Length: 496
Image (cartoon, rainbow, N blue to C red; front, side, top):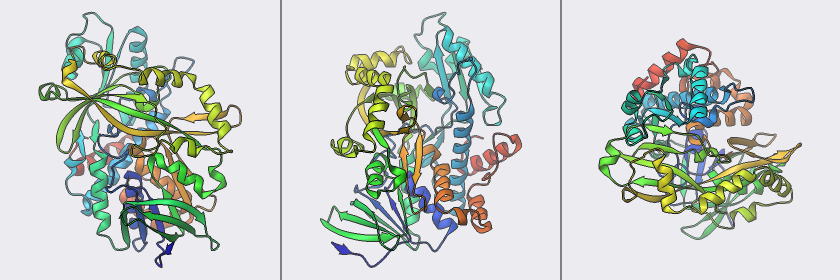
């Protein structure tokens, strides 16, 4: 195997939103740093980051009801919603800073305003939504939220959803005009276009990481396969970030760091119904989210979703969950079995036992016919016609399974950063809310892996230049929340 003489200071694995975000952050806080980025596919942002492969909502907790669970005493837990709303505001600030730097030019190619609505029916669900609204409406991040139960208002907000609906049905919705649609594929490719122009950054497509080992000098020895030229080589680096989506877990396991012990992954595939009727697409201008089925994973919350992809308005419904042993859309059916090791076998079996509702849900989803999917669509769009919709394959997600002292293993519905004690290697595992919170996730990586430098006045200042609210609480400071929303909104060309 050929050994490369050049040893970059940082190696980032995966050509998606996470690696792009981290690379730009590193070049901002440490301009002279050398970075190599490796992507196994022939193009960037082609897996979970791609516009057709993810929910693309710009997850801000405005409409996602699973972020505000009802507690046993009947009250609504809003902690996660506030956290995610804050993180999305940080993402917008970061993107606005890139526009100011000239790193990104066309903001409409990746971010556009689409109202975010939560929609429910039935007495108990309406009661839940009203309690959720009351819990959020006075919070700084949610003060613009509207609530309605009357048919006239709801018809104005979402005509397709209301047309043909049974008169007298108990329904309700909330609306946030500030909601966004984000094409993370377009955003990521724009970020990589900028990175390619920076000195010290090299991007390798069609390069697959085969092994990760700790070298004698404390650096990481990375075995790389050039899939185009069919050649192998090794490269060394003091810091490695694994941001390969579903492919992160197998690579993390290869590192053999003790912090990775016990982690497993449960793959869930996704499908959309994609509207092909331009007249229907033109009549809907919202992201309408409902309540998930019992046992459903977070990324399977049903929504009638207006998207802007490649400057074109699209309409999707779903996603419908499925099961595949692949960890990536372009992965191998051996991904799941190969990920099973002695230290994660029990947590994985235990998590499966404690999540039988999820297993039942996936079986139901996999066995659905096209007519079943259309019937599910009709709960949100009563006058939907099957001929106007086609089935499209979405991306692959891998839910985190981790050790738990009480239950043996738990299924985590979120993202998690796993890093070595010495901070020389880190990996991002999990799915939702994913791309929307990439900025805060990568700040977390910097804090864990470069802790001393992150405490320096120089790095603090440079991070604050990228994210003006860094280190401050938007949730508890209404004036600051309005100010940063106004600035980022004006730069990005979106409502604030």
